[in-house]
Amino acid sequence: MILFARQLWVPFRSPEPGRFSMLKAFAIQLYSRVSYLRYRMNSTCIFCKIASGEIPAEIVYKDELVTAFRDIHPVAPTHVLIVPNKHIQSVSQAEAEDEQTLGRLFTTARKVAELDGIVDAGYRTIVNSGAHGGQTVFHLHMHVIGGQRMKYPMG
Ligand code: AMP
Image 1 (cartoon, helix red, strand yellow):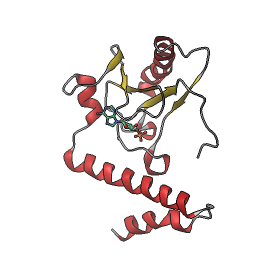
Image 2 (cartoon, rainbow, N blue to C red; image 1 turned 90 degrees about the vertical axis):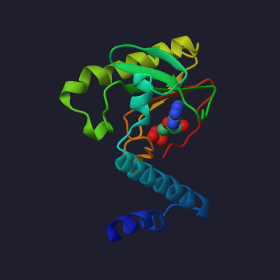
Image 3 (cartoon, rainbow, N blue to C red; image 1 turned 30 degrees about the vertical axis):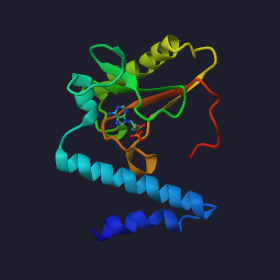
């Protein structure tokens, strides 16, 4: 518990400029850790349920390895999540046997971009991993975001 509290305190000690960015970093970390604890306590995974069809989502593509569906809180005109049908917690838990599935995430990103007509304009693919990566749903997923010019800096 003490270790957990000390980790939450880290963003306040880091030399980032501006109070707002420190608060934002703290909020993202807090949300990520609470989501992870909730996932561990419930031992249910919302993306497993979407991949299996147990709960609804706006599915845009599905095959034997991955499912792609629209993000419930889109940050751009195209915001699709691609998840392995099999539960893999994050990139850190991916094994050699998952390489075909991990490759399929990228070829599906291209399919999604074709579907939404954004191949030529370009788009961003993001995979957040763990608390510092900003992951809030602990089932590996790739964001495909496009339909507008992406902003910098990242991180
Ligand atoms: P991340 O922060 O990388 O873990 O991304 C999780 C994403 O999942 C967020 O962009 C959420 O908006 C999205 N999300 C959470 N629940 C759902 C849901 N039921 N259907 C679609 N997207 C979801």
